Length: 78
Image (cartoon, rainbow, N blue to C red; front, side):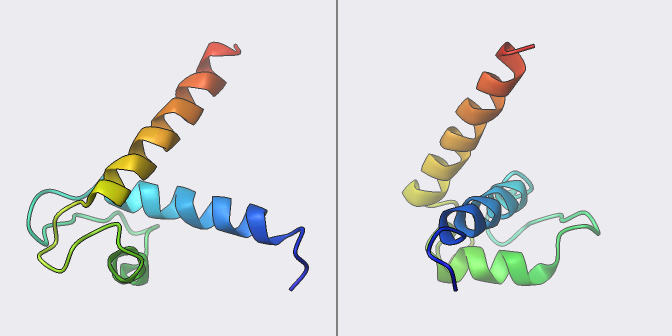
């Protein structure tokens, strides 16, 4: 893999995971729209964004905060 593509892939993956985290409602209750595969939930758990009990972790909350800041920065540009 080209090392220049890696940050872009990581950013897109984090964006996808953040989308999944926004649909998390307590212990293992996640109502995903059809566009989000269940594999993203499993990946988010394996990467530490969701704990084994299904709750958002500190890492997950940090990701949502970063995505929210990025999105509000985009909205403020217009």
